[in-house]
Image 1 (cartoon, one colour):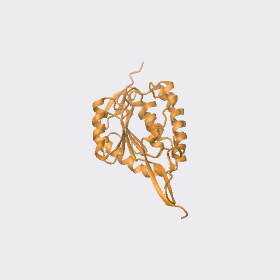
Image 2: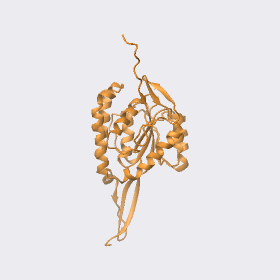
Image 3: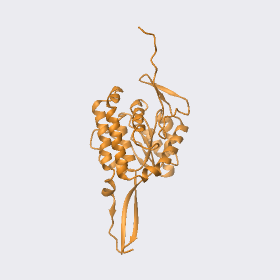
Image 4: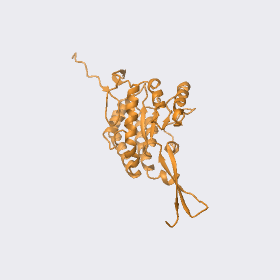
Length: 274
């Protein structure tokens, strides 16, 4: 018999490719582990990191972004047993790995599907092409802490956006463990930033932040919370993805809706023969 106490793991935030402690110094206990309780200042720091990463990430080639998402899938495959050990169903872990691969494959194809050469009455080329919106806030699905999280983050970043994620409060360990996967992949720091804690506390600051261009409220399942966050997002006319009125089957074909939700269409005219 030994009276030694095991060292309790402390999970930190993931901001700018690093793992800082919460500015508040607070934490809460989940599955015998300490998890950081993010504050308003942590939200601001995460948005700053996400904004700084936009230029380089959106400026990378679509093919390169696809390669990086595929690398994330490779790293997640190598840590499959670890996620199962956190309580994730094997089928959910496998589906999360496959989802990274699926979105990676769309990286250099979505512009072909949603771009267009428009017919015009005149000697001009008129071309429309999708471009990323910018910084996207994400309220992660609390009912699917790994597969649901991947299903909302991957389509946002593969098209060139960067994200600030509010992880599931009740089940944050898959999200912060995924942060360890991202940190050891080729993903540039700041493209994905993950905050743990109370969505009711950090959500309003993220939704109202004037340097956030869009917000995905998929995980805001309480009607009053979703309504208040959408109202806060209206101040700078953020794009908003509202929570689904019915439960989402995260194993179903995701379609292209989340790929296009955070894209803007840029149209240019150019004279023919010049």
